[in-house]
Length: 189
Image (cartoon, rainbow, N blue to C red):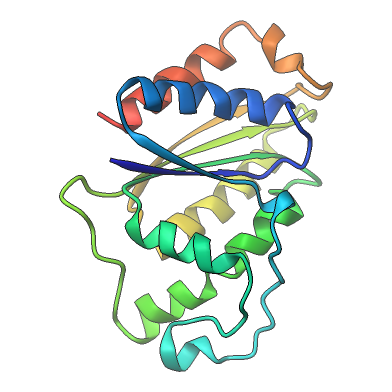
C-alpha cells in the first residue's frame, strides 16, 4: 500500500511533525511505503485561476506539484497534517491543495475521477492548535474534506488537539501521540 503524507507545518520537529511521525512509524511497521511531502520546503506556486485545467484536467504551472500530482494518482492512503493558523490549514499546505483544482476539473468537469486501487483510497487528518475553541478545526477539516473528495478519497478520520502551542507540547498530551499511531494503524488495515 502506498501512503502519501503531507506535513503542513513549517516548524521543524514541532507538534504536527511529532504527530505525523507517529503515523509514519505505525505505517512503516506494517510494511507499507510512505512518501512525505513538506510544502514549506517545496517550490509550489499558488493557483493562478487561469482556467487551463478546465479543458485538460492538468495544471500548466511546472514546479514541484508535478511530483505531488503523480503521488496522489498512485496513492492508496493519505495523511494530511497541519497546525491551525487563524482558523485554517497553513498557507503552504493550502497552496498545495489549491493547486489540486486541476483534479477537481478532471473529476467534475471532464468526468474522469482518479481510479481507485483494489485497496481503495482513505485518508486521515491531523490538526493541532493553540486555540481552545473548535472553530479552527472545523474550518481545517472542511478544507481537508473538499481536498480528499476532489482526489477521490471518499472517507477519512480526523484527529484534532486544542490548547497545544509551544514546540513539543504535544508530548505532554495524555493520549495524542498514541491516538495518532493507532489511527494510522487503522488507516492501513
